[in-house]
Length: 296
Image 1 (cartoon, rainbow, N blue to C red):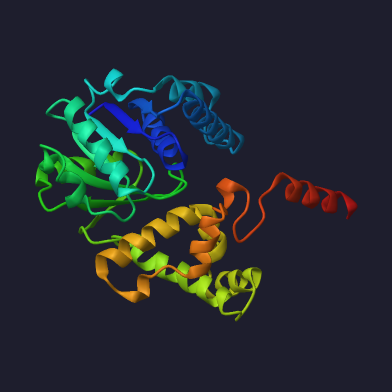
Image 2: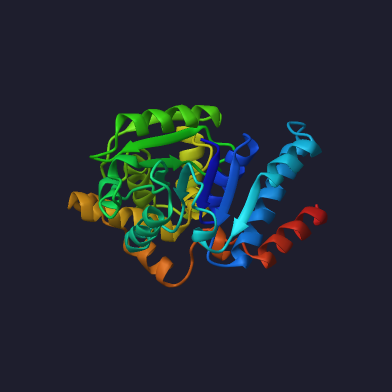
């Protein structure tokens, strides 16, 4: 398996493309617009430069990595020779089902179809294809080039051959694959999202402020990032989508998203990606921080 197609050039998609390309795979990165692809390549380039600055990569290795990536706005232009297609689109069931139908129609019979979904049923996604035995979940963690974990999720019909091939491939990427069964939220988000939701509930009830809640979890529980800051980093819209999937899947009120989270997403406050969430990431805020630094 050498020819990889990655669908989606956003945060997860460009990270997945980066990781495959850096390991020597040929990668075709697909998105609906050239501007999204250009932004994805710019992010990959910036991240490679960061690796170089730490002495962990040469300029030649960076050039080789970027040389392994081609961009397309039409899946039909690059799917015919794919050994593996990894879908990394928005966490939306209808969108994923539409993409998988298209993937199934365009990819060769041998091709494995993987999804980076963080919560949606692999079995449900596989049901719209004619190759459910070749559909599997590869849930990478963000940021993909750095985080070691990959949840490998089998659907009801995923074959042992497909699972073994993806499990071993994940190791070649320098990742640690973990076998997970197909239940809403899998393992990572089934544990993480209720914690984030409870942190939002704590804020909503006025128990403590944003920084105070995060400080307690960082200093008291040794978390590298507080749950509210982490929610901003993941994307509040993504957190909401995952909680909704788990709430619908388990019919358990403990997974119901807090009203504050719902309102923030409705108001367009998505976290880092929108410039504001529980914290302010706007350019004016950055300028204010810089001016304070120089004032000291």
